[in-house]
Length: 99
Picture 1: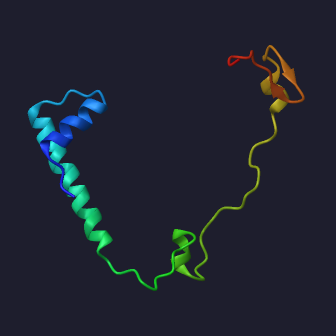
Picture 2: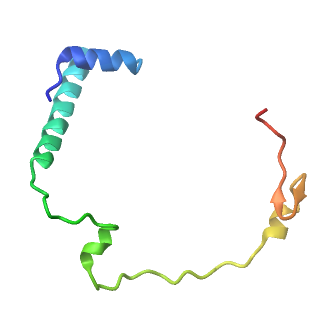
């Protein structure tokens, strides 16, 4: 799927962009290169390839170096809320802005 300069002009108009002719040509070239890359990836035969649930799943049994999920700072909620104009049950109260 190759775009034309008319396509770029229409896209720019829809996006409310003003492109100089050199910018339009550059954008056309970049988008066509992108679509060529997508077409190249689409041509790869992926029959029988199981999708990964997570990119790290390809590592198999390799242990990832993840830090422990522990609190490293003390709870200072009350100290943070001292200067708040209104607090209820540990939450900041703010005026309603959407009706």
